[in-house]
Length: 275
Image (cartoon, rainbow, N blue to C red):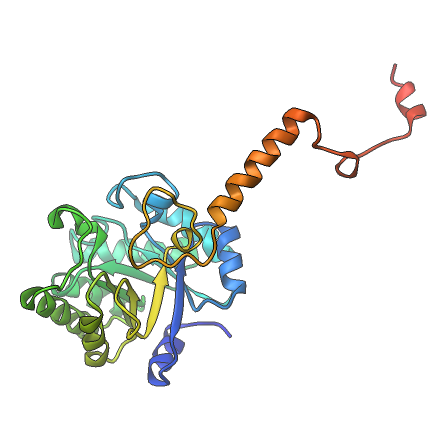
């Protein structure tokens, strides 16, 4: 069944958990979609996962558009959500409208995601009124990592917790159809989930959220540089890939690959005519 903004809302009403993953290209999106994942976020995390950046801040609209086009081609049933990159929406309501419109028109995505609480509610309201579904994102917001002084858990004290709760309520009121809760205490995530009528999608926020999202490369063990506390490795694909690459290289050097079964042939008498 095709996942939509409406089916996300229905899932919350039925207490059915939503499973989301990131993807940044056609082949991964196709595999994720075939596995029955509800939603694919083409996150600005692609800057760190696919482009080798140290954070998400340098990701551009062109980067997101390029990768989302590929993902949308591979996803038949998952809801495809394109991330709004840093400074594509913070500058003005008009910029938010123009860039959100580009993401839907030029990529095949069905929704956009943006980071922020009350301060971006005018942008959320305007984009939603333009018939573009918006997923919000509160708690740890990677685009604000410089102001945090690093990737740090949010909402650990009363002031911080109230800020997260108020942000979630504000983006719901502005019209967001769902909200990502990133790196906040599980008890706070549970309170937020009970306090809003839209689905909460957790990442490092405990299991009381209405759904979960992970970066696919993290959960497959493909990135050896850093593994966040909230990530579970469902497979060690990185090790398997590394071993396969090494075996391939060795077989090429030894003349083992390609073997006869991987080779095209023609009759010898045909080749003799070429001399």
